[in-house]
Image: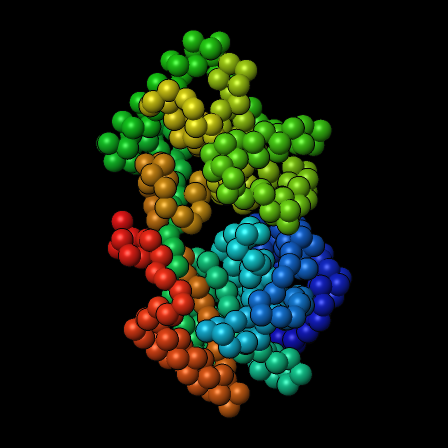
Amino acid sequence: MLRPELLIGFDAIVAIEDAWRGLYERSGASFSMSPTWLSAWWRAMHDAPVDPFGKRTGFGVGLRDEQGELRGLALFCRRWARVAAVPRLRLDILGSGEPKADEVCTDYATVLAAPEDRDDVARGLVAALLGNGALRWDDVVLPMMRRDDPMLDALVRAFVRRGLDVDLARTGTSTMATLRPTFDAYLASLPKKHRYAIKRSVSDFESWAAGLGGHTFERVDRPADLPRGLETLIALHAARWGASHLFTSRRFHRFHEEVTRSMIEGVDAKLDLWILRAGERPVAALYNIAAGRTVSNYQAGRVMDLPRGIKPGIVANVYALKQAIADGFTEYDFLPGEALYKHQLGNAELPVVTLRVSRSDARAVGLDLLTSVVRRAAWSIDSAPRRSRGDVPPTHEASAGGD
């Protein structure tokens, strides 16, 4: 029997960081569940605005055995959330639920447990969440879970067994490259047309770059070089995405400054930051993260003013894939999201799902009823025929049919 330990406030979570890190390493979970990633997230995001009101509170449930060893850990951010204009108390898995403009994409959320303890940890977690009357919540949300995560099935069984409403929805797909012992063997695992596209992209880039003095692919692996490398990445990311690029968010920027400082030292995972140059000019950058046997392609950037057919982003990923094979990694994960280069370079796909659990007690039933009424009223308003006020003439666009 595992004993629950409630961790109220993020200071209580930090106090067990050593045990947390040990469990993270045993669990095989993604780097996004590590102390380095989630502590940086909390420091950057805890004071971000909450819709509709209130603030975020760090909260966790640890599960310990009779000897006091930490066998399971679920970390949450407790906040109010608006569902169809109705406020509900939500437990977001830590690392998620920040404002869209600040979102860092904590992919592959999960509850930490050693493989042999998953079912016991899931049952203990649900019992702890339901057994503390002072801990009010309406929904538990774990976004972007791997569908093949064994902890997912254990959690679903445990929540259903206690009569809670469970919704499991596919919310995306991760594309990945299952690596082979050699790059040629990896290429052979791809469709013929993708092999051709990859080889042609590399050949065209290298021929073009030769006219500029050649190309270099630099790994930024010294702490002293990190500020320059991060600055180059951000500039190339901005070149690719323009004014809407992610690093315009102060919180997003602050998070990555902290997490890259830790990961370049190899704390919990290893930063794998690459800069591709043609001549002296940086033309692409990759923000990869290596953990376990996997390299994850987390973020990237590239210039947009090169000759037609020159594809520095694909080429940078090809070079990084080659290095991952040489370093002994077995997987190169492009993470959730659709993009042509992922389709060309990947040889496997993984469904990503969101687990949402809602209480079914009297308060929850009342909230569900209120939500339904609000949604119905909103639909009635949206579908009602419109009539211009007599003192407000229709706009030119409306009178012209919007053409």
